[in-house]
Length: 262
Image 1: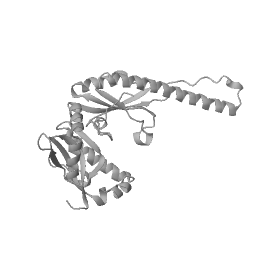
Image 2 (image 1 turned 135 degrees about the vertical axis):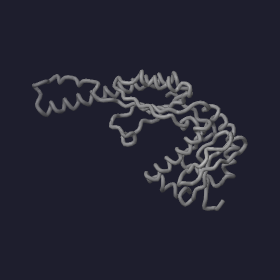
Image 3 (image 1 turned 120 degrees about the vertical axis):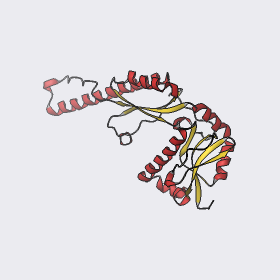
Image 4 (image 1 turned 90 degrees about the vertical axis):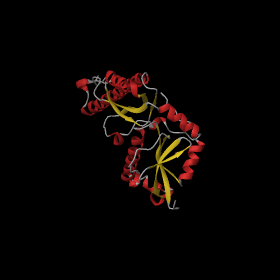
């Protein structure tokens, strides 16, 4: 391989045959399969002028580039995951060549094997819950008509703030109940940090950003839980299913990262 080229890694599976065929990955590069010791890595050749360390430092600040790359990465991972249990690899994971990928599969063979056994027959579902304003009536102004216009305005502002805080507390409590109910069905779950409204695309405050690993056989049951626990001042969204991004990563020590219910 030319020194100005690297290998972009998308996902690792067990070596169970060819496919999927004809996939285009990041930067339109064709995706190929590298089999090694019973595992298969899906990868493509990329230019280090675009995916080298220095170039990536600049590119990761380009939201348009990042979105396009993430979509291509996700498209490949989902195509592979549709065929067999898959351990997705983090976005823009680039190696110097196939020999380095083989070293990865050697060094972390047991961890990849454990992850693939764990996610077999399961998919990741996302659940997002948002506080719906207006559930709590503002308290009456004790000064009533005797207050000056300025004092009345400040009292209304304080009452509205207290009302919003009460709405948020109630929504947060219900979100915890939603998470607990979902954990009765899910194999494992994880609460991610709430997204900023600019990322979520909603004006309401997010009170739950959960990821759940669910047996395929219980997917319908999991969705019914959402229907049963929705409302009560909370808007709930169910998204997925996806490849198990939240439950297939390896931590820095090489152990399979496990989800938690915190």
